[in-house]
Structure formats: structure tokens, C-alpha cells
Image 1 (tube, rainbow, N blue to C red):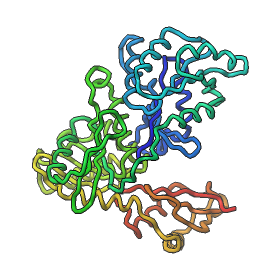
Image 2 (tube, helix red, strand yellow):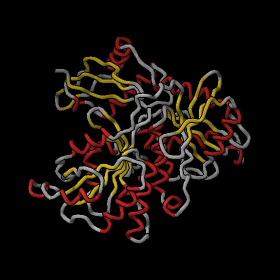
Image 3 (cartoon, one colour):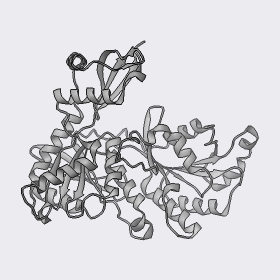
Image 4 (cartoon, rainbow, N blue to C red):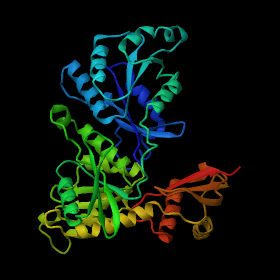
Length: 435
């Protein structure tokens, strides 16, 4: 289920972020109004002609006080590491600059397809001034206007054409999961402990990024693939000091997983970066298990576990569906429970409900708590059906979607959860007008 990754690269002020936002549209943040979810605009999803892909805006990677050209170099290197296809953005108004040449020389060394986008071509006259850009050596330049959306279709056609060929790949029926969390929560120790308890390793396969390894193993007669989240493999200031880069690596792991183990450090408690990463896992619609690691290090009484769980629920209200397990990578406390939990959550994430059964639940819920009335107009729900899995997604056909209050939608979601086990997975409700 891995998605290709597109990195948008170029010197400052050529419009990289404008292009990024134009392609991503409202996909950048699905739950931006939900408390505790921090948006991170460096990474988002795009879609073109049925092809979904991940996007990196390297302009959003803050390199601190590094010199100008060094920042450009480092951002381009990040893109080379992470991307399947690179969109190299230049500006038709300024022509080819020394900084453009610097980026081009870096990209020559990359074993990645590069698509050249000549931005700010806002009118036909400017669109004719693209021929000098052939000298950069990346084939046909594509004149575009990120501000107005002109030419983006042709650009995306070229990007899609450059995606890796996956026709020869064998279908993988294993359950894919990853461990995510900020540094020092014990992800690597948990990986080692899990593999130590489940030593029947099937294979190690190349992941979606350079020198990333996905590990297959068998536990309880079920095959799992642990998606690589070792994260920062390189050395150097750009990789060690750029928090947003480490978050980006976690986001890629999330996109390639069925289930995410969101790891917290019991010793250090909850930090802001925890919320950022967990928020993206929720937005991405993945199954989630909250794993509180280093539980052995705390002095405990009869209330310790209860109080910690209450604190987690307060800080991550949008993850109310996610089970919490308290473990220790050091002592292996409760680690044996994780494979079964992952299997259960993966099953719930892919669960389908018959329309007849679903409609019985919805109509009973409406009978118990009638639909809201707005200025004399009452919401009417005619029919409900499930339209997707991973995550389970339900469409409610109604007389007017604007009449669906957030609180009533949450009530219907809770009713669905009461009747069907969706532990560990978000579910999406969508209202559609019945014509």
C-alpha cells in the first residue's frame, strides 16, 4: 500500500509552497479544527487521475541559520533521499540563476526522475520564454502558474508518468505496521524486543526510501511486516537538528502502514511533537494502538495506570477509539499482547458492514434521538451504506448535508461503534444529498 513520493525542490521565492498547496488543496489538514491536532504543512497527499501520492515541500524544512546556498543544498539532499520523483521549480521571471544551477548540479547526481516546472508563467507571453531552461538538462520544461493553477495538469501528467513501475510487484497479504513517536521514546528497543519474541523472520525487504528495511516475521500463525521507522539514518546537522524532517519520516511510515503503534515514553510524559505525529496518523485514517513504553521505570500505586490513561485520553481526545497498552521493551512486559492487538485492529480497519444491518442501527438511533431541526427544517436521513474500508467510510444520504450538526454526526458515529467493534480504527461519516 506504499504511495510514491514527490518532492518539490528549488531556490527560495520560486513558488514551491504555492504549488504544493495548490496540488494538495484541502487535503493538507482534514481535522484542523480538532483540539490537539497540529498541522504540518511540509507533507501532504495529492491526487491526479486516480493516482494518490505523497508530497514534500522542501521549502518548509527550516535549516536554521545556515548560509543561503547551504540551505538549498541540504533541502535538495533531503528530497533526493525521500522522493521517487522530484519536481524542480524555477521562475520564468528571473531566468536561470546561480542558485538554480546549484540545485541542478545536485539533482544530476540523484538517481531519481526530475520534472522541470517553470513557475510564474502567468500569461501567454511569459509561457513562450521557457526555452532557455532546456539548458538545465532536464528535458522539456513545463510552464505553469502555481498562483492561478495554469499548466499543472500537464506537469502532473509528467510526474505520474515518472512514477516507479509496480506492475511486477507481488501482492503482500501480511499486516503492515509501524512504530512512530518522537526520539527517545524507545521505538528501536521495542522493535528489537518484538523481533526477539517473534524470531520466525520471513525476510527483510527494501522499503520505500533508500536504505530503509521492512522486516517480515510470523507471530501466532500470522505474518506481519514491520515498516521501517528507524528514521534519521544519516549524520549531519540537517538530519540531526531538523525536527520537521524526523516528523516527515514518521509520516511516510504511517502512509505505508495498516496499523500504527504510537509510542509514548512513560518517564517523560506527553510532548507537543507527540501530538503532531499522532494527529497525522489520525488524519491518515490508519488503525492506531497507543503504546506507553518504559512502564517499568515508574513508581506505581493502585492509581498510577488509571491516572496515566486518563491523562492520555485528555491529551488525545480524537484518539478515543485507540486502545492503550502499557509495556516495557526492557522487561518485555505485555509485549506478547501486541501481535494479537495489531491483528484485531487491522481486522477492524478492513471491516465491512452490510447495508441492511447498518440502516437498522441508524434508524434505531434516529428513533431514540431525533435528527436536529434548523429554522423549521429537519434533517432527514434516508439511507446509509459503507463505501470504503481502511478506514471504514460510510455515506449517509440526506435531504440537506448542511443540516447535519457536528454533535449529531458524532452521536451517529458512537451508535455505530456501540453496535460494531471498530476498536483501534477511525471511521468516517460523509453526508450526501439524495437527488
